[in-house]
Length: 137
Image (cartoon, rainbow, N blue to C red):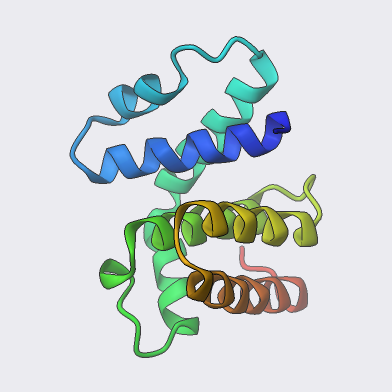
């Protein structure tokens, strides 16, 4: 597995632990304490912290697109992959949008359901289209 995929998966696990009630620092440490590669650790931290920092705005954007789906009622894995990938699409221009979406789909395929892959792909593709057409401040 590549370093960036590992960083994304670690960030996802950290987000899940945070939602489960661990403090932010404890959630990140629990997943990343044995990561020795500095680039992997830094990218995981960037995704985790950035997703948390922008979570409310990301949830609003996801909710607008996922009509009739309350973000809080989505499966935890799907919700956190959507948040994290939306953060990366919007705030990490160094990663091509297609790569972000493909990585999110592969992670969802591994940790959720096949139906979730279509759901996540549809929402992220809309975010990509809207963001590229009219970036938010």
